[in-house]
Image 1 (cartoon, rainbow, N blue to C red):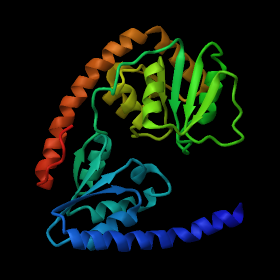
Image 2 (cartoon, helix red, strand yellow):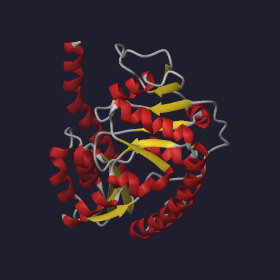
Image 3 (cartoon, helix red, strand yellow):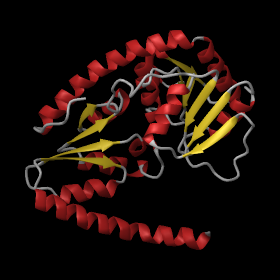
Image 4 (cartoon, rainbow, N blue to C red):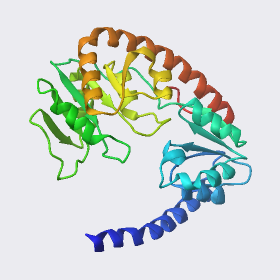
Length: 288
């Protein structure tokens, strides 16, 4: 395992070089008026700035890890310095304010929201927990919460470690197709989207809102601001998560009604944010 890991680590710089060469080639051939580049990793921004045509606009789409993931947060000052003559996209007001304090124009744009891809048909006491098994996910507490609620059925997506010990009411789905993912979420009475990192929005939270599914999420200000009263907020202990799931199951109909209202509000805000971004880029970003 050490040899494989070492080979993978040694190959990373070469991959970055190969990707940088291809990116610069495309940029110099296409000569776009504007470029949106997703970060991390930082080399993607450096490459874009080197390869872009003179006078083109660059917008760096900064995932929260740029600010608080130890793998990339060490480069935050350099990232924002490079973006100072351009602009960034972030997902919440805290990160927008932090960028603006450093002299960077910031657009606050959440993941693009839409109405769900089909009607839901929730079962009885189904809990869905989309995971990537990243370092900011309280996996052990989630599994212990499921263990404390044996009368519920839990679906956990993503590639789980082989040594993860599960109670009988938890099923690992592995990675699933988009169609299967939405089908499972439509059958869920509760969706969990939990993170230990502050100022972090989660894709699963957006998906639960679009699907009008009751959501349990971390008790963080940016999440309360976005989801308002359509979610149940929890500390990241097994007992607290289990209590939040029980509350969602009890208040399911009310939470669905609230989610419908919050989604309509956020979609209106989204259209205004995308209009401002279109104006800045001078390009035709598709309407949501």
